[in-house]
Length: 253
Image (cartoon, rainbow, N blue to C red):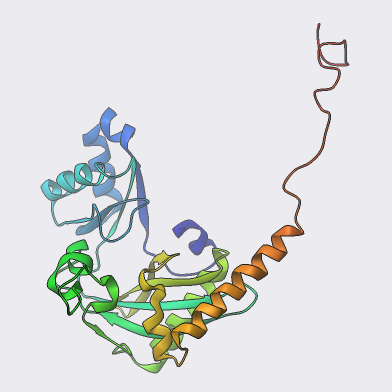
C-alpha cells in the first residue's frame, strides 16, 4: 500500500520491510540494517494486521530487538518506520467508487498512550455499552469531531483521502488514518481500513448523511460494481493442450 501511494505522490513515512527468514538467518545483520536506515525511535508492526495488534515503539537497540521479535509472533513480514514523537492522529472516511467519491468530516481520536492500543479501542471501559455489554469499538472512543485542525489542513487531508481511495481502487466506504508531525506540520497517510468498524457512520452523520441513507448508498454501490464485473471476462476458452504428446511442433514424444 505504501509503495502504491508513494508512486502516486501521496505522502507516507519511509518504511523498511523485514522478512522473518532474514532475521532467523542473521538477526544482528537485520538490527544493524534497521539502525542504519531508520532513525530511532521507530515503530515496529506486523505488515498485514490492524487494531494495533503486535505494535511496539522502540527507543533504543534493546527495545528494537524486543519489538522485532514480538511483531514476528503475528506475521512473517514486518514494517519498521520512524516514530513521530509529537503526533496528532486524524481519521477521515471516503464513500463512493473511484468514479465518484467524497470525503467525510475529519475526527481526532484521543488515545490513552503513545499508541491507540487494542485495549483502548475494544476492551477498556471506554468501549463498553451503557448497559455494561460488549464493546462498541471505535464509536465509543474519546474523540474530537470535528478534529481540532485548521481549514487548510482539513482540506488537504480530505484531498489525500480521496486520492488514496482512488489509487487503491476502493469501493464502498473506508476509513483512512492520518498522522500529522506537529514539529514539521507534515501530513502522512498511515493506513486504510477497508471495512471500518461501525462503517464509520458517525463521520458521515456529522457530514449530514443519515445512517440508513448511507446503507442504501453502499447497497447501490455494490449492485453497480456487480453489474460492471458481469461485463468482464474472467476466463479464456482455449485448447492449448489439444494434441499434446501427438507430435505437435515443439513437443517431443
